[in-house]
Structures are given as C-alpha cells and as structure tokens.
View (cartoon, rainbow, N blue to C red):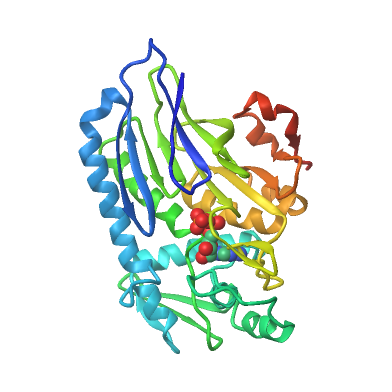
Amino acid sequence: MKLAISIPLVGIAILLSACSKDPAPPAEQSWLTMGTFASVTVRSDDAEHLAYYHETTSHAFDELNQLLSVYLPDSEISQLNGSTGMVAISQETLTMLQETVRYAHGTSGAFDPTVSPLIQLWGFSGGSAPSGFPAAEIIAGALEQTGYQHLKLSPASPLSSMAGFDRPGMSIDLGGIAKGFAVDRAYGRLTETRPANALINLGGNIRCHGKATPERPWRIGVRHPFDTSLTIGALTMQSGMAVATSGNYERFVTIDGERYAHIVDPRTGCPVKGMAGVTALSTSATEADALSTALFVVGIEGAPALLKALPTTHALLVPDRTPMEIWVSPGFQEVFTPHPEYADAVRLLGN
Ligand code: ADP
Ligand code: MG
C-alpha cells in the first residue's frame, strides 16, 4: 500500500511506503511559513533527529524570510524595492541575487525576478485582476520597468555589498526562486551538521537526503494538474536531488472567462497560457524552483533548448489541453514511473 501525504495546493506528494515488511513510517513535522506549508520528514530509524531537523529548517527559513520577503517592509528586498540609489545588502542577500541573475541569464530571461510591475498589473500579488485585457500601452509601460539586466550588484567588499536599479520604478520579486533557495540553505546546514535520511519541503519545493528505507530511495508523487487529488506518476529521488512544480491550478486569475497562471512571460508582459503544470528535477532546489517557472514560460517548444543548456535539470511538462499529454525529458523519463492509467499519455521531449 502506498500512502500519499497530501500537501495542500502544491503539485507534489511525498509517497511513503507502508508495506508490511517496511520499518515504521517516517517521522514528520509540518508548519506554516513564508505563506505556505513546510515539512521535514525523517526516516524512522533517524527519528531522533526530527526535533533538530525541524528547528534548524524553520530557523533557516525564518532568517531568509526576514531578508527577502516583499511582505515585510524592513526586509532588504523591500528596502531595495523602495530605493532610487544603491542600498547596502547582506552577503546572504547578495548571494541570492547573484544566483537569481545567473538563472535569469541562463534562461535568456524566461525567468526574470524583476517582473513585479507585471505581477501587479495582472492582479497576481493579491490585488484585484483587471476587469478586461489591459491595453497594449499599459502592458508596454509595465514592461519598461522590468529587465534583470537593470539590477546592479556591487560586492564592494565582503562587509558591504550594494544593490540598486539603473531604471526608475523597478522592483524585485523572488517568488519564483526564494523557496528553493531556502530549502537548499536548510539542506546545507543539516547535511553539514547531522546528515540523516530526510526530506525537506517548502510549498512543494523538495530536497531529499539518503533513502526512505535502507533498501528504497525517496519517492515523490507528481500531482495530476487537472485533478490534484490524483497523482500521474512517481519520481525516484537520488540522495541530494530536488524537485519543484509550477502549476496554473494553484494561483491564477480569470479575465474575460479565460484562466491565466500567476507566471508571466517577461518577453510579452502577459501571463502564460497553455501550460497546466511543470515539474523540474535538479541537483539543487534553487535550480529546480527557478527552472520550473522558466519552463512554464517557454513551454513544450522552448523546453528542449533550455534543458540542453542546463544539463543538471530534467523536467515534465503538461500542456493545458485535453486529452492530457505528459511530456518528459530523457533524464526525467529515467526516474519517472507513470501511473498505469496515464502511461499512454507520456511523450518524450525532443532534443
Ligand atoms: P509557486 O510560487 O506557486 O511555487 P513558482 O515557483 O512557479 O510557483 O513561482 C511563481 C511566482 O514567481 C509568481 O507568483 C511570481 O511571484 C513569480 N514570477 C512570475 N512569473 C515569473 C517569471 N517569468 N520569472 C520569475 N518569477 C516569476
Ligand atoms: Mg519556481
């Protein structure tokens, strides 16, 4: 029997084996943070580490949230967003911004942390959705205030790093990468201090260490994008691997009766249409998070080129159309077992 612990509103389920010959089920602690659901799961024979894992992980998440959250007016990112000149930032924020720019560059701008004016225009930041499709000039105006190339980072010295924009009206939104970064930060601290067989999850951004049982690796279920009570298959996770999902069923707005995902195409300024869900598998949670968002933007057509440029990432993409098609890259196919009911829907992404 397989038991799927359901994580609300994310595209992924942690699959725990509960066969009669298995040891006791893993120990798990979950909590709410960064506007989502977090959990640590520790294998039964490592259960004594659970309290330490929970404490270290929640501490790492809280620390980063204090620096990066756009909902906290005192965070370094909020200070940067409200500024006209260069502002001092910590080494930690600098590292995060440098990685973010690296992924923006590596995805030719499909992932772009400066999309905030567009996110606001389309009502994805908690504001109300526009009553109709915004006029082209309004979209063009918001696009004028985006572009990761206009984020300037100057690591003056290890003790004083600076960040700023060279265009007015710009701001940063790390919603597409910060959760993955936070998972890597917790993962790094835990595996350096007390490595155990465990899985860290922040809103569906998951990284695992070791194995689920002495015989079996950790397994993660990929949710059915059209019915999140179901899974379309399971991923076998090697130690150290991370997975993230972007979906249009989690947060979206409806304009003129059409559903738009909360991910915008930085090239057009419009929300992405046509994709239902993307799951990215990678060697870091930061990369999986950034790439799930970027692949959602480029879709089936753009995915092969993007994945070729980033050989440490593999992906599964489901377009927003029926009958369901499950497109997998060759590296993803190797570790993905589709649910028998959906085996015929699987297609291999070309090179
Ligand atoms: P979730 O936040 O639901 O886990 P994602 O990781 O895909 O899903 O991140 C979506 C968030 O990323 C959006 O809510 C927004 O804050 C931000 N975002 C939207 N479009 C882009 C984009 N093209 N590049 C970078 N970040 C984006
Ligand atoms: Mg993401």
